[in-house]
Length: 167
Ligand code: ABN
Image (cartoon, rainbow, N blue to C red):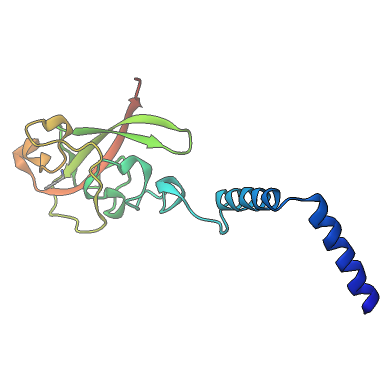
């Protein structure tokens, strides 16, 4: 045991002679700053990584970014087709949504589907880029079925890709 003590003492003395306190503190500081930059736990980040960006029945679906209404995919239709017995209102509002899987921005048209009473399932209110009603092309908080045949009742909302947004 004494031999071990001598070895450690010798090593410590040699270290104390050759390494300054300041350089030890500098190295320790660098290590702590570097360690802070590395996340300790895996963390889900951002909208694209969370939720359900590819599930048409989820409000997190990427193309619903400016949605305000009941998701037609939960009401017997799909993301882009009205349920049977309803028809798309001719007046729409548009939004620009980023598709995280290809990193591109798309112009998305939102159509209210009209002809049956309110679906009541999967209410989705995300409103990215929503504008006041006096800018109707970008306003979603409005029953666009008033523009459909005989003002049929609002049922749900679909989203259709119109094209890639260019700057
Ligand atoms: N555009 C969807 C909607 C329909 C009825 C009322 C408010 C919003």
